[in-house]
Image 1 (cartoon, rainbow, N blue to C red):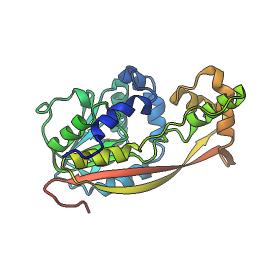
Image 2: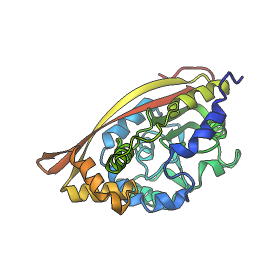
Image 3: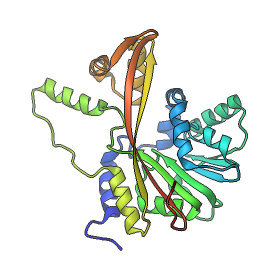
Length: 283
């Protein structure tokens, strides 16, 4: 039963401002970045393995990966489970996933090109585990969560950002640098609850008492030169040409020299929201 705050409406009201590519053709957006995205996320396979270990998959189970991308989690899950259904709206992402499958000799992943919001109940068979990792940037969150719950036989696992910082503070830096150069004060501060809090409380309103776990992941990104780092970040985060110098300044402050060139140490805080079907708590 909804409380004082309507979490469903709050999500809808803040969604457009929470995702910088909202309103665009998202399939085309990710198609154009699929290969670079694949290169970046496949560098750190240990984190993916650590995330998959949390799920406790068995060889008899099936998994539905919502927003599978290029298979960062689908590939290690396929090694442990009976099969994985990888759902993504981007043909470019799924093409990279299929190449990764071939390279690693994995054949038990079924790829479906479709957005989660366009999937109707009954269109997909139930799976033992339904998972989403950093991919629930949908407008109708309540509907998305309801479908995940309906299609899960054992459990639902949702990895999401804890603080909305998907770019290590790049956009905040660009905004503050631009305002500083203009000589003006900072613009209006964007205030609102973190996405995971909205999601968690919306689930409670839906009668789903989920478990929540905070995690911190460490990783290093290596670049041969500053120019290579600038080119990758510019493409991945859609930085316009006129902000090239600010981007170089941002990266220069964060890159350190190492034996192979330059290194950026990244620390990501993430939240796992999960619930077991039938009332049991996840291990």
